[in-house]
Length: 350
Image (cartoon, rainbow, N blue to C red; front, top):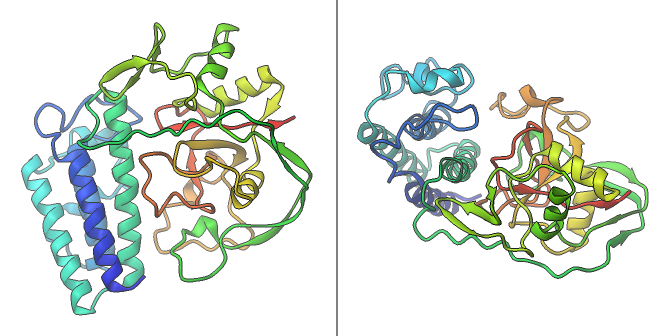
């Protein structure tokens, strides 16, 4: 990506971040201590710190931060999650000022031609991911949706399964100009057996039948309504079910006589043009998050490698996912019990 494009996208990402978090000052800036959220005041500082660490300090702890003790406060690889509520954090206003001062310096660096473009785009993708995570926090804690938020889940009509003939398929990203993460590298051949995959994700109406048969309801369902941020609305029957864990998706499949797709099957279907694969909800796959053959970690070594073998792969992106991550080859990953994310699933014929 060229410097001018990066500047444009960094500015857009920062505006998005501001919309989703900058109004959380006061009683909401720390919030309850939960394993599935970060305190917003800490997470805002972490976004600024990450940008500074990689863009202005080139990933070196030997180069000091403009904020004293920043590494001890905001390095997510070394700061335990449970401690983030009790750290001696700057005030919310001071945290925003630190974040925005770093942003200004990164833009100046890009405009002067002195920036490392890889690290600048890494910081961009990182901020976009945290902007989506702030949406999860707002949903989990029942805060209002961000100003101007459009929750479009694009219901699709029912139809027969998409039939894939199988054969040799290349899974993963190919070298090129597009920014990719280390866990997407590189494209490699896999052999797929013929399979049939649903043309839409499991809907609320379909999932409700499973609940009525004894299955577990999504955590945000109650008395025929679902909670979307701070509002309770009638459960839309044709929208894809959301806020289900991998375990719950597996239980539904066992009940329905179906199965989750392997991530290679999901990617094949997305490449083949099956509707609704990108940008509506994240979709669980059957696959455990593992490295591709020949994996070599990128400079941000904590991004992928620590999570291999313990997380499950999701694909596709949600309505809150920026375009940089809502890509066919992008691999998201969470532990199988997580249901707070904007995730559902589609099924394959068993």
